[in-house]
Length: 287
Ligand code: C2E
Ligand code: MG
Ligand code: MG
Ligand code: MG
Image (cartoon, rainbow, N blue to C red; front, side):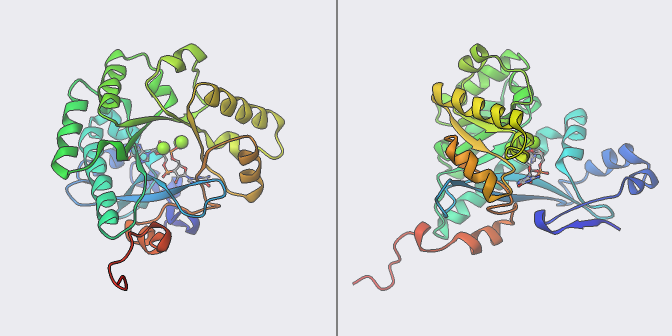
């Protein structure tokens, strides 16, 4: 029986279930058909400017609806997909799915500045930029609407091809953010040379920002550094008003987390946020 976690619309399986299902090899095996069996889904979590109650940006997050295990966390299945190479087809699917959702929202009047999509460094091989540009063109998707999130550790892996592909896409208007920032080992000089525009403060520093002085100092230092480099800062895992207040006071630009909203389905996102502030002026009622 899968355990429900209502807030995240998400359920974690018990470790014992994994054992009975012969653990990883089963997940690994089942994941092979996840795309073709339509077991993958995307969820969308809004990002807010502190003090603004309309979302302007959104992050797309992948879900695997396993027939026996329920929702398997991407923390579990992304590493498997990276090992088996399936991350390529899954990542391609996620990109198209999320971009199409963004376009569908626009059609329905929900105008957002950007959609952020997570990508693994493994996806970013030699043909990545040209393939992505081709599929954006197919969908008539403006590259300036897209931001790709790469974890700090992947970004700093030193793979020159990754940096090259990122630069190619940056030239086309695609933005890049460093995810889970603070958990890796970026030096200031390295950071300055990376073609990124956004830093996402890892949620581990946000969690105890109110009581843990070192977490507070780390968050403060990240925000200061980002500002001095002209980067935008997003805090992830914002769960309380107290955390939001501190982050806002420290000059953090954007917040994302359960305080504002859990990840939602595309339809729920539209229903929740499609109010006047984001809608195009309606033709109806205009003289
Ligand atoms: P991430 O990109 O750092 O995403 C943030 C994670 O924090 C998400 O977990 C989100 O649901 C969760 N979260 C959001 N608000 C809160 C909050 O207030 N408190 C707490 N405790 N958690 C919050 P999720 O969706 O399980 O994703 C986990 C990780 O899996 C992501 O971390 C990302 O690295 C990876 N991932 C998700 N989707 C994709 C994808 O399409 N492609 C790739 N390559 N990786 C993905
Ligand atoms: Mg992310
Ligand atoms: Mg993160
Ligand atoms: Mg993370």
